[in-house]
Image 1: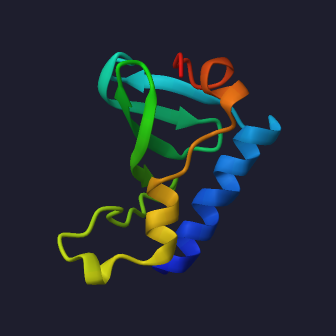
Image 2: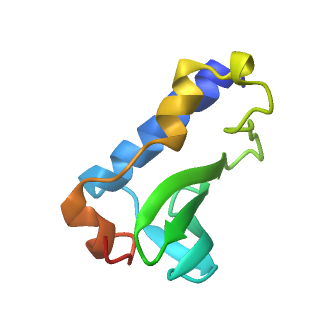
Length: 104
């Protein structure tokens, strides 16, 4: 899977969650602070950073195949628009609590 294919597939999964076609389950972490890991019903692992029980950013995403691309580059010139967009993703406000279990 190329980086662009990975980004596209990750967004497909996030949009499935938004539409109720996939679910997420908390598997590790403290929703009050730090990295919080979720497993989707389709096998994706999504790690978000929670800042005081509020969704801050997407830290990492792993496909069911194990494919993973770094969302945070040490060299800003290596940042792709898709990676910036993926790590900046926020679910719709009404779903942050209902689907992800965070307060904000």
